[in-house]
Image: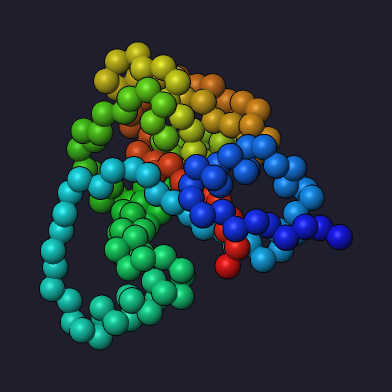
Length: 169
């Protein structure tokens, strides 16, 4: 019989537990997947909406299990290019002034079949040649490198690093 997970009262305690414990000995069935966003959000927007629309957004966000603002941000991102599809005409028409830096998480804008990559795949900047050219590493779920490519800024968009953890519900 598997053991029950202990109550972890702080992030440092949880990090230490995960780093040192044999998690196969514990019952993980009551856990649920949770996503955390760590990318900075430095810009703001205020808008007026019909009350019914805002209520519908709140309900949809609640059903998706995310905060309302994150739900709206994701809807905007999808409307401007989607997370796994080709970028929309609006996004491709916008000037790309994004500057990537070393170890930034990036999203591939188009398929690269020769490398086994699809639009929406996540990579990391591992070398910056100049403001518009980068070495990007894409990894498999196993952690092994799938592709290490020289790409331009036009091939990429900023990705939000998403770390998935599971916590007891």
